[in-house]
Image (cartoon, rainbow, N blue to C red; front, side, top):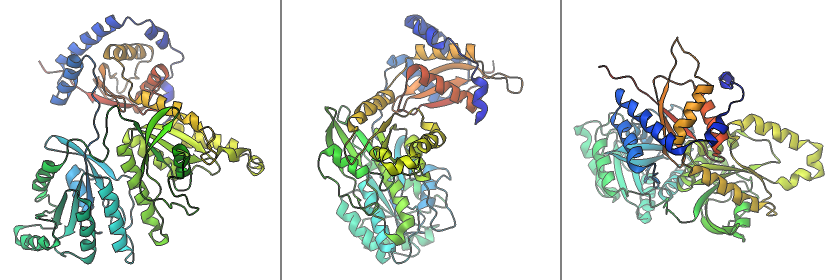
Length: 507
């Protein structure tokens, strides 16, 4: 990824020039640039985005939480195939090996002009002894984090005792449930699906996830009961800001929650991952009220070792759906692990604001730690493994003693402010013009891609769209993001930079 260096181009006067910017003039220039786009082939989505800029005077919409649909069922009933069919791409990689855990569990999907989140619970194959228990546990997690459940049964096998156990849970939940009779590849097998009426979940929907048969009818029915805004994530605008406390088992998430809540709120046990139910907790920190979405680690049963990681990521995804900002707790007394980085990557993928809390900092000054030069190694690990989130505020805390907990609040406020930050179109285009003038994009194949116009399409996270005449190198895109951060801050928030390559209209 070292191609960024060629865009360094030495110091520039970008900040000074933008500080002296005449905002009215910048807006006029942006409007003129916007007008030049009419000579290019634009699609309906482009038109909608551009209409939003002119009509709303840069007003920004807060996107409410997308409603959540969860897919539950025994192993091998075709859950992943159904996920792939619904999201329309082979993203939920279906592996031949049982037990392949994928980190992704939440996908964005769309049907009949409605967007929603799809949660795939089919991440791993539990062993035979634990199968009933683990499928039930999976169903429990899914029920808790969704608005609608798709319960998938293999119509060719019929209802098993595991299925019946899950049905009991689903009926108790009171959530809308769709019984999906999968593997009905043609009309001759419809009768097998009909036999599933006996489960007492109402009409079975016969589908073939592999061939797509019946899936459209199923989704049409789901859309009729799916709420516009998720009831689970409940984004009340103006309510307490929602914070997810994440981290691998035993880094001190529960202690942090207890200290923040001022009481022994979550059972903390020496066993790794003893807490299981996410508890939303309203707490007061730094004179402000916050809603803490706890995703405490899953109880790890030894023989479900594999599944535990899957649940942890399922819960992490669920918590992120609910949260606006994530505090990822890292244990400074131990080497940063791959799991730590994976959790941070889930936050990035979800587009939430991010704060890094380095816990157990009080141990850094104990004699045994000093002998190991732990602090020096930690700095090196942060440089190597967390370079891609160097923009996230870092707070050193001790959850056990409560030391420096007050420092979390300014970090959270900064990150949320950045997450909500909007740059007016005039300013953004002035920034792009100055940047390109000082550091032009390198020639590629004798051509130089031009940036025609840029706008911030949304906040939460700040998302920018560039209309260009050709693809910009990844290094150049990172360079734009870095300069955006250096000038406008965005501390604690990911920045999304999308490109739309457009061609001039043929006269």
